[in-house]
Image (tube, rainbow, N blue to C red; front, top):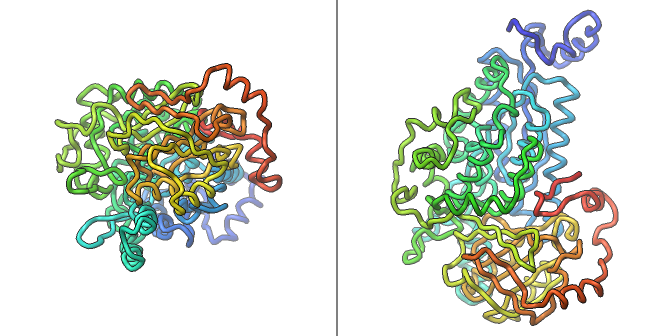
Length: 562
């Protein structure tokens, strides 16, 4: 290539002879050193099932880079499995890991003067972290994920991790035996990949594609498919084109692109965690996303696709998974519907070097029972932001996964200052129908780390109480959560938010159609309780979590670290 490279600062001229000797110490030839240096950020490890195969993805990416005339240089990042971290101290570290991953990529990219980046995530926090890093560093960059897990098969039906967490509640309720649970355990997760439903990982992988930062197919091609390896090779080749054309994340991640991604979010019924991650990525790109704007997008966007944990057909209990969305045409087919309807901007640039409109021009729906263009599941999108005297700064619910009977819910509060006590009460059958479980001091500061509450919500659903018990928290939920579960209540309890003032027996009112979350208390009573409230001692006083708690913002602002 004839033009100057960013990496010239570490390899050009007599004064860089020592630098070249260090490259040669790794076996690189002069020819390799003189080519563009492509940083390959790989989150592979032997802990996370979504990441166990990323070494193969990285090898395919590097092959593509070499085919197109570049020199790939791979480095590692950390990655947490939310499923394994669920229900114990480990979950405090999951969200907090997002900032560490973004920071570590910035360090590696800046320290070694890479010309471009290929970023390889797959699971929950790693994807937004890598997008945040790409926006911050702003050199040519592209994402290639490891792809979704296939659904498991259990007694003739597709199942996923959702059924495993709900199986605990079903066992407690006496609906299944321990032997049944063990049989499900063997079947639910059949191999590598991000868990097979529209949970957080697959939500973010699909939204990365919708944002324009990954090639078409990134969100839905199964992890075990050879097509995933071909996509990885194409990604490695494409990053070289991005260098040549100098297409950077700032050219792609513009306000209209985030609007597109959030519209796709609503059409797909994505995880509530996208409300944390998309604003955090946008902030790194210099774009402000206000929570109240999400309801505007939701109101105009039909809910076209329902995947696990939601039930596609309540009568049969049928669930679709990401593999079904892929067979139906993938994210491109969904975006084509939205583009035809004038709901997304087709002029935004993508890593293909083409616009969104050009990318989706030939996309077709191949399974109309999965992508319901003509008869959407709901007139509104999958997520809703609730406000009221209990959540002045907002709360979020995956309304597409709430039983219609629970869209309006009122009941007395059962208050717990942490998830563990709430789960223990559920398992001991101490929660009554009609009650609203309140789990607080689990926010970004109070947790610290804003734990997911999948164990609690799945236990409720597994016990068959999804229509009869609601749950609100200043923590968050897994993308696998379903039922009347309202998370991200802001301000959080640790900041003196109203959720910290709730007492047992207070009447909580949830009104999803009107986007309200309230407690039946007067302003005067809330003010009196706030005056009496004292901030609790921090749960963690040293180490990374203590530093994180001191600097993290509220969930309403994306839980970003300042």
